[in-house]
Image (cartoon, rainbow over the protein chains, first blue to last red):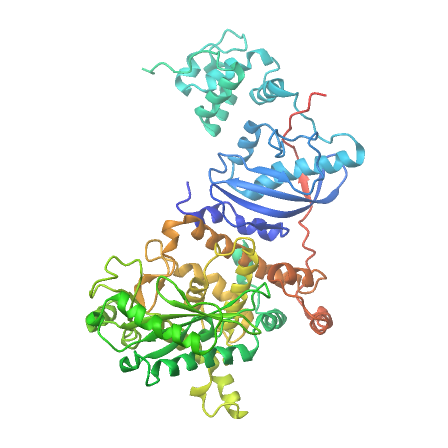
Length: 231
Length: 399
């Protein structure tokens, strides 16, 4: 349910809980369009087969009013993470593919969830990299290949060449998409093949998200995205 | 979870001790209050002198603002000015003259006062008041607001809307340069009731001040409890307001003017105050309950002595001001809760410094150190260990 007011939004996002659990982060005066936290995020984290690391980073977190549909932007302001380490062109941290981040966040509109599922794993990865000069977690291929790689693992196929077709179907209405032939080459219609994963991610992120993705993947040269009226 | 956690926390005497120590650092010298009172008195005497052109209107100067409520805090910058406020009620009808005539008649007396007292800086005309600059060891400026008593019909209207008659009777009509009929005789002056608010505040605070007032009279500092001024009351509500104002000042130190205004904090805190006898419990209750008194529609934060007067009227024009109120409220809630948990830890001194810009002195540090064993269980401030089952994969750099 969308929050009715700014104060309700703060409650819904669990701002109180974040300030208590990560007291180094503080709310900054309003600038409009986003709620901003600044300060130090201290954490202690561990991963399977990896050592426990305690560390802290000076950060600036911008949580857009459209959160969790819109993804927060995080900048490291302490000058510790170099531009060459998983950063976006605008200098913000590249925490993961937007589709993955949105899937993680739509489960709950909580900032703590974002911090603990998306941000701390990134920071843990950097701290680990500083110590061992290797990454504790996998990374995606560079550029569009990485996008295809990520979607392939989401959809459950190893063939990256058919991903745009799957994305095209995900941007369609469910009833119509299920009648189309599955791009995996099984000769079955989608409703009898890869429909579970496709329907699940469409339900969570909405068709418009996949329209944008399809446009990105095909660089605007793909099929028309207008879906025929269902009878 | 968070709210329950706070509610179940007992009012810790150490927390109250710490908060009291912080307020002691924020308090201005008593001599400043005395100087402020002397300036109001001096102006009142000037306006009533035989040569005064407004003496015939029986001017009555009534102090207002934080100097009246006893909630002044030391400014963050030593060079900052203290705001003194008063209003001067002239006993004339609204239609005796235009707003412009009234403002200028009063202004002439204020300028003469400044000249007679060798004030170097010029008197400044504001939309509603005149500003008198003072310059001595502490910089003050006095905003003095000319006004006339409200019409009986307006006062009856306030009473019919639930304002206690003794507060409604204090309503006044004020001048405003932006008023469309500023140059015309009209009954449509802006209505305001700062005296009613001050009286409401004092009525809410006074019960908690009785003991201290009797002590001061017992020590022969005052002849009767009626003579003890509010700045001497030092009640948990007044001290809570001082804490909240300083927290606001620190949070918005780089954006002065964008934080919640003192009148909103004072108003909401006074509503929320439940008569608690100690500062820790009072502050906890005030912070917890003040949002209950923010209306969802206009007037958002009404003057209890004039419900049409909205202290948050700027929120509609500038939504960031409202957002800043809520952001500040969430932050102060967290910071006060954090003080409780850092009491027994080494980070206490730095917490107090960063949150209130206050340096605890060696005696205070020692005092809290001595009580370390009795304090709340120490919390390291570090989050519990987080297990990372999977991590979102960022893009590689293609190297």
